[in-house]
Amino acid sequence: MLAFSAACNHGQSRPGTAPQSSAKRYALKGKVMSVDKNAGTANIDNEPIAGFMDAMIMPYTFKPSAQIDQLQPGDSITADVVVDSDKYWLENVQVTGHSKPAADKPAATVHIPAPGDQVPDFKLVNQNGKSISLHQYRGQTLLLTLIYTRCPFPDFCPRVSHQFSAIDHEIRADPARYGKTHLLSISFDPAHDTPKVLRAYGFSCAGSKDPALFAHWEFSAIPQAELTEFADYFSLTYKEEGGLITHSLSTAVISPDGKIFKWYHGADWQASDLLQDIAAAHSAS
Image (cartoon, rainbow, N blue to C red; front, top):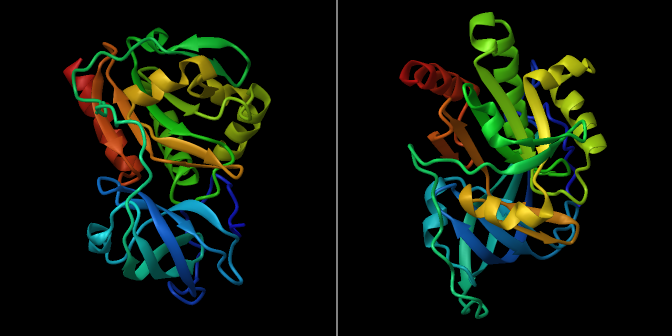
């Protein structure tokens, strides 16, 4: 298994640490299961990697990023896994064979959230076990991101949760914006992410055990019955296997009128980007 922690404070470098002093390299062999060129990631079913991890399917990024362009589902590859602190990626990717992916159901048209799209009133259960819904935040700018609390991949859920923590901290220091915004982290793993688990995860992300946290930043789960429709609307792909969920990332800024203001696919955004979106959404409302 990965030797990574799922703590929410990933993404911060340690003061005084040399940028590449801890980098380690491992030889990977595996098969490409899916490719997401928009996010710059591919899910690889890798064979056991000696000294690093067991066989599993997990997402990888690439350096240089253009290496992903040569990959297709079904390709067999070799590569170097580079692990540096809490980040990892593939280098020196070589395609060693091609095979046609197993036949599956025809892919439905993927819904891409677009500015101006009305967001459905999805029902959720928050960290206090209370039923909430997206429409109740009308009149505020809502920042919404999708996570699951067990995610071990530093560049995925732990990263976006760390960025949301920075946003929450910044807005709390500005009373004029505080009452006009709301943050919502939504789990797509409702079987595991119970209110109790979400509450503990929220405290961990915020570095505080003050229940007042949840007045501005809530943690919730989408019920299993609504998960498929919810995932389709927010262009979330996910697959559970071996106790892990391989998944894409999806973060949305919803304007006070309940419509998509901006949508981010992947983790290629910073807290500062969403803070600018908040200001723009307020100005446009």
